[in-house]
Image (cartoon, rainbow, N blue to C red; front, side, top):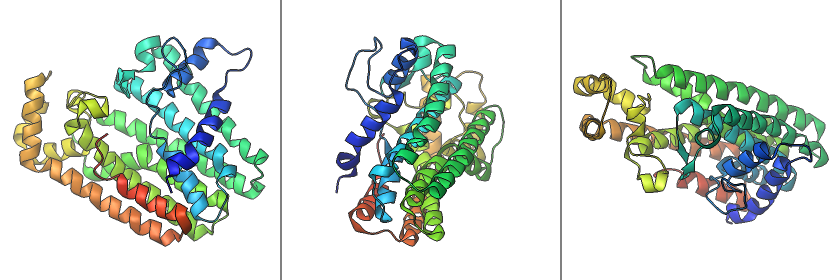
Length: 336
């Protein structure tokens, strides 16, 4: 089974219905949302471009079906986690000063910080609005209450993780355990929530929904470490970002933290007030020599193995479970 072919048409329709402009809504606000989500160009005309992977809602729907539930009633929750994810991306672009995402200018680069913040806030609210669709879909009230509780808790964890990530940029030293704590909030929590919500909506036992959350969180850690690797050594044509961009921003990603801890020459280079392209190339070579690239990939592989073990404990079945395992395996050694 191809989960993207199976779920994406219904998911996109659900997302578009949630984000649809109300009669009195500002054209600019809803145009920005459609632009960010990949449905419109900068003039707000319909366009087909890269919309993002939609991985989190796909994992939610797969987990729901693998646990014996019908996937259609879970669509509102799938839309909610995707909107929450995109809210975080809009604000993240502002905070990191990123001017491009998925090969296009970011919202703040086109319409300014203030309007981009408004757009992010709107997606945040629309994520909650999407969850109300669970009532109309006939999901039992006790399950909806659990979904809402876990969604709220994860919003806070995500924000805590982003706070730590920004704070790291001004800290001279950050150890790997603190980095992992940051990633658990910024990246892993939302993927863990997605998998857990699928189980909750399906009515899976508590032990299985916990295992699904642990699966998603471990996979999220592996995913972020892969992202850290791509942030330094990825192909800009594939990632949509300049190679070595994390070095220029002094981001405390895993390979950079490893390099700071193990190479005095790398520490001295990164302490310079400004870095040029030659410095970036030198820094990347030092990270290679210090084993920082290898360390990052090995840590990602360790968390990936933990994720697959937790998924086995979750005890799903059928085509959806097979697709869930296959999709999890594909996330290691990706190129964008």
